[in-house]
Image (cartoon, rainbow, N blue to C red):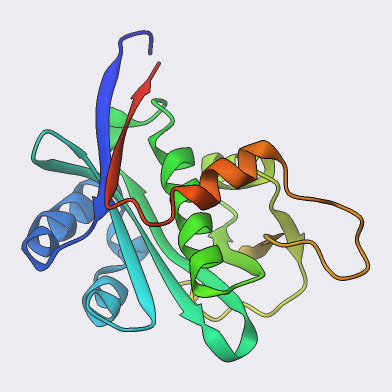
Length: 183
């Protein structure tokens, strides 16, 4: 799409839940819905939900669950309204999930992706996620998928230093929301 779209990303609030469930109904087929996960983790201390809004209307969300003892985070659901796809909203939500994971102390983030979801697999691949051999626990029964993981912090033995881009992302950790103009 070539038109500019003003999207605001912010922490989800309890008032957003009913509209996010409606968004899920529009975006997923019945066996892919994450309704139970969204309701279960929405106000949990171990999860965080970022909402993408156009005006006051939610058009996407990412739900990330943190495992503090394991220093890892898992993207349990990422949803973008079908008419708003191809505006970088999914990638921006993915980046916010990574920022939240870093803020929680996670050194890696992962997600389970159904094989039929080629768009999500491509987006994760393009953003540095790699397929790993961990067992799948979140996908619906009888669906094939892969687990994809990304290291967020360099290990002690790595010589990689944070880039300016990463420093900018880390400095945004305390922001309540921000606006991105996507093309």
